[in-house]
Image 1 (cartoon, rainbow, N blue to C red):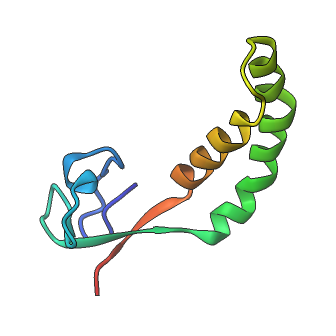
Image 2 (image 1 turned 135 degrees about the vertical axis):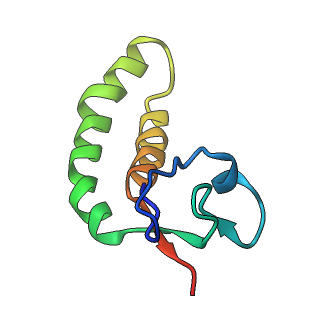
Length: 90
């Protein structure tokens, strides 16, 4: 993700993004930012993520003796992470 103010990369796992503070700040420029899920990106990515979940990940998990339903949850979490974006806080 890139900061909307300074356009530098900000990791979703950075200390400033993982803090429980109400106001999150860019670690580079220290301006206020907010996380949001881009629904347009979710719409684009949902079909490939479902196909990977059903036809690749689920059979692998079942062959390892793990419940195949975990593939849906795992891919759903990846879908949300892949569609997260930053915007300036109003």
